[in-house]
Image 1 (cartoon, rainbow, N blue to C red):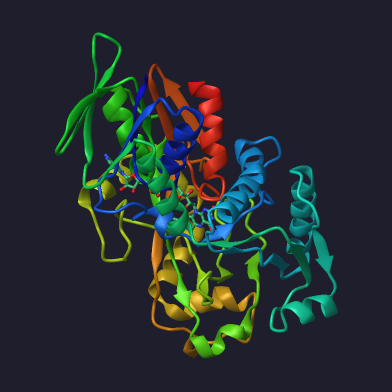
Image 2 (cartoon, rainbow, N blue to C red; image 1 turned 135 degrees about the vertical axis):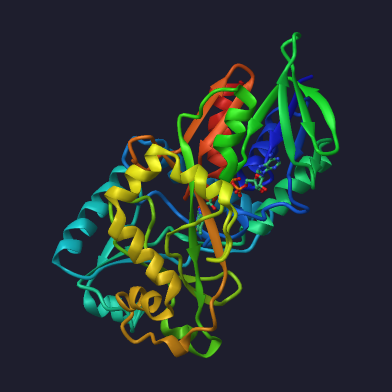
Length: 398
Ligand SMILES: Cc1cc2nc3c(=O)[nH]c(=O)nc-3n(C[C@H](O)[C@H](O)[C@H](O)COP(=O)(O)OP(=O)(O)OC[C@H]3O[C@@H](n4cnc5c(N)ncnc54)[C@H](O)[C@@H]3O)c2cc1C
């Protein structure tokens, strides 16, 4: 029997625990989460969207895993009675330049295997979204929304019902290779040796890698906070679908968009603000250690130099509600500040940056001896979590 330790109780750690338990019932799975409940970071603070693979470079891991991932996630939700809805998404171009980008996006989506993509004419758009202003609009009918917290609870229940353990409030501090090939895991409350360990620590993936392997991480995580505003109940019918702008192809962020929530609400966001703390959910959350860690990294400084105006624009939308609403107005000009409730929730993305300052666009997973490290798993990591888990098992464990 193999003893496997998974570090991190976000959707990836839990999906891997679920898939491993299903495929290898004899493996003994222990999942360690530092918080007192699962899904407290990226996985519990995202947009709740099921992405189907429109955006990603054909042939990339993201493209491959998102297309299968949405099918697998929907089928999981259907079989486990998890709330979800395939409400469709409309991607909106606002000018001539964006029209071209949107056409390229549609071609990319088709290359990635998406079905049913359709450019809407103005009257078709008006019927679906009376308030959306577009010079060109693309309907992506396969996309939808889901309650990822319910998905994670369900994975966790499966792991426990099948003889595994989910240890909460158990930060893993050390992993020490032993002479017999096993690895000793030391948490705040616990010590035990394992045959295989899987690092799914999200915002800390690089530090966990260095701590476990004693090597410099090939990437550095830089935290980008995404803030949301909620539309007040009486104005929520201003939007019916998921409505997204055409994303800037230079960034892995999708731009401030309108999201229909699984609880019936509507929200707008997220922006992408450089955070001064890895788990910094507010502007006032500052960690001197994290800030110095980012500032002393050549890749981060290179990123800032190359992307100064992007960073400042996002920061402005964090400080000023009107700058934030201006981003939403690009899609629906009728929205006004009074239609939003006071500042809503936020999430922090773990975004890997390479030393040259390039943002790592694709998923990045590596294996070193009996350690697997998920170094970069940004959006659509939640949608694709089951297919990422299967990919890891197929390539690194089977
Ligand atoms: C604002 C935002 C919007 C997004 N929107 C979408 C979307 O609509 N659709 C989509 O598919 N994806 C979306 N994503 C991406 C998606 O949420 C992530 O890809 C996914 O949640 C990554 O999961 P994870 O398990 O790797 O990370 P996390 O959820 O961050 O989990 C990592 C876990 O590791 C724990 N941990 C860290 N260090 C230790 C340690 N030493 N010991 C024990 N535990 C530790 C943390 O507490 C945490 O719970 C979004 C992300 C953000 C932030």
